[in-house]
Amino acid sequence: MTPSVIAGLLGAALVGLGLYGLILHPHPLRKLLAFNLIGSGVFLVFGIVARRGAAAGLRFDPVPQAMIITGIVVAFAASAVAVALILRLSAVGRRVTLDPEVPTRPDGGDAK
Image (cartoon, rainbow, N blue to C red; front, side, top):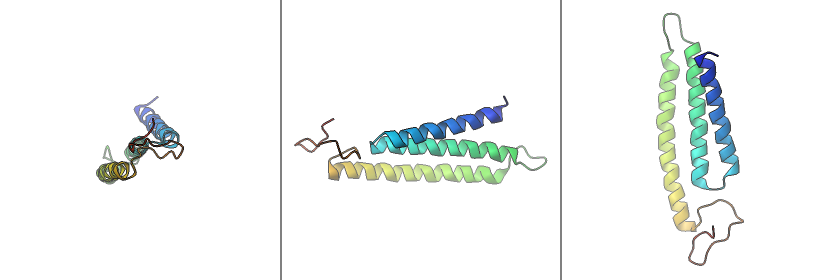
């Protein structure tokens, strides 16, 4: 197996693991981490595809690399905003899970 195939499989595994976490966990922070894991897998696969599509004489195509770097910066900024929203949601709602079955304590916290 070539390094490109291994990296592609690793990217697919990251996307699959992220989807698993996104579907399974009701906690918003875990959902955010799973979503970031999906993004990392997509960036990895996109980087491998960009390497294969390089023009003659170049090892890598610079345009997809620039798009990947831009995507990483945007994902970081979106994650920071999402963490701020999760913190605000937990402060206002006094609940840190999206599961409606979890009762809240009298002091405002979760029963878990």
